[in-house]
Image 1 (cartoon, rainbow, N blue to C red):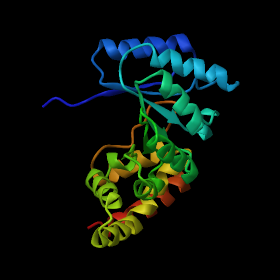
Image 2 (cartoon, rainbow, N blue to C red):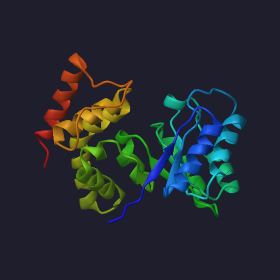
Image 3 (cartoon, rainbow, N blue to C red):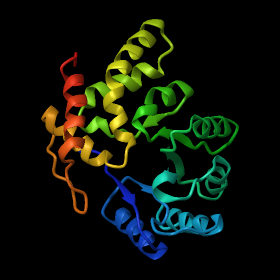
Image 4 (cartoon, one colour):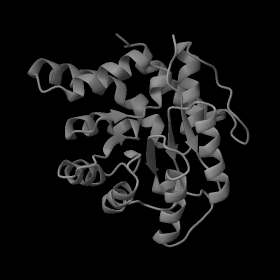
Length: 232
């Protein structure tokens, strides 16, 4: 069958970001996740112009990625809504701040607006909290290694049935040590290590990243193997 493919747009310059969006549309991508310029630190109006250039470069639905620890700028809910008022193709935000207040502002602020902006959890260790607050999705890292458990966790977290809440809490308690691997600087290498342990991939990463080694690898494997030994 035919699946849906989405492009992540990450560039140091606005010109290159626009070129990537145009190329994504040309090759048939169904949407884009747009990032701030990754080496720039400046006032909001410069970031706004960067986002607007990408949003205007193709009529694809787009999701804004808000991750201030990695990309410096912290895009507020009001700034998101201002962009969405001018660009109907801004349909969602992936929030990786780990701050529940950010998700609350997006969810509550979107309710009274003609153009809704979906809030998606971007940090694995906040998946349940986000779902229970009303997030419409989860951009998951550990889903690459444990897809069935990830889908089940988020589905249960969205339910208000007592038995589902109980099942969700039990699954979350088991899953949380692994989900926390997504919240540290070497999260890519650690997720790849979990993939190697579950047989869903291997430890290879793209340079300049390198697989975790030494004590860090040993500590991670202890956590991973302890969790997998109790996997249902």
